[in-house]
Image (cartoon, rainbow, N blue to C red):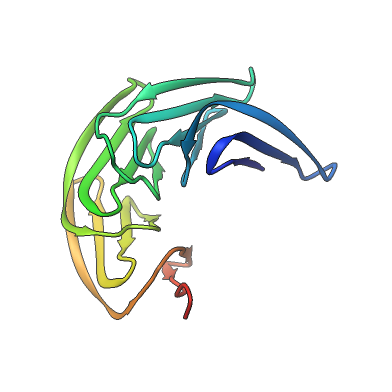
Length: 173
């Protein structure tokens, strides 16, 4: 289990088989809320900046790429078909990083809202609002976002997907 430090330069690596932990040093000191594993590399986008670290597990080295949107809070992300989808928390931008080409495109989401969690299901990204009642559903194939109303205004910091249902426990409630 690779656990990058949120605000610092350490990443702990827990070996499940042996029950031991090692640490490695990451290059920049950035805020890391989310990460994605793809082909032996861990992609860690910066929250509130323009950097994305890429840690190569095989070589133990880190490279950094630049993302286009500065001061964008990337709290959650989803990996789908070699692309990392990073919706903005507290805004309307979603960056889409193409791993194969190293390029980033942006799309506009309809609601300026806090997005702390998301789930990928059947080619769609479900993004419930934290401290609100909106859920955006972004269809990757069409690029269209649908908006649904949730029954309860609550802080949603985490969620889990199981058997076609998204479980969203409240924070502090």
